[in-house]
Amino acid sequence: MTVARLAVDRATNAPVVVLRDAVGDRGVAIWIGAPEAGAIALALQGENPPRPLTVDLLAAAIAALDAQVDLIAITAVRSGTYLAEVRLVDAAGRRHVIDARPSDAIALALRTGAILVASASLLTAEQGGIPSPPEPLSAEELRQHLSRLGPEDFGRFFT
Image (tube, rainbow, N blue to C red; front, top):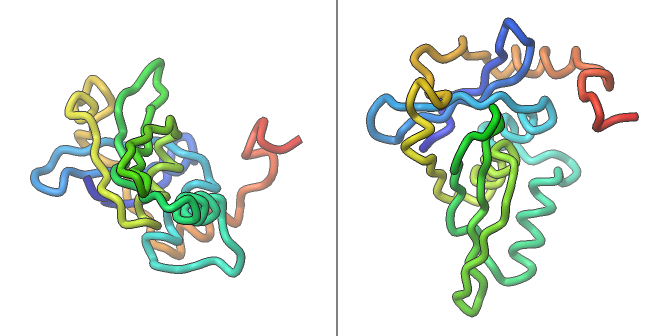
């Protein structure tokens, strides 16, 4: 899978990451939070923030433990919530699977160059596959959208 685009759902004003099959036209749209959209946008643009983001901290911790991200898998959707796994390989060749939010896992894949896959069952219209993806945003439109968000837009993450 590749990250085809980052968009904003105009109905909900929420960021959406659109994943597409590297070969073919199947894909899936996943609604994500604004901070994760920002991390994905920076990674897509090849930019590094002045201070590390959470995804950068995670990538550094994985490297410090002499492990590497082997694969990022978007595995399922339950009650409208997508699930993902970060699959690691350590220096001894042992494999580890870590449960993750898809948005964080996608940002990690972009930062580390890991392979990104999605379960074929997610690419059907019944499971959230995308027959017509949201309109794409330019980098400047996304920056403007993110700059208009306030603490109240992040719900329970801010008190």
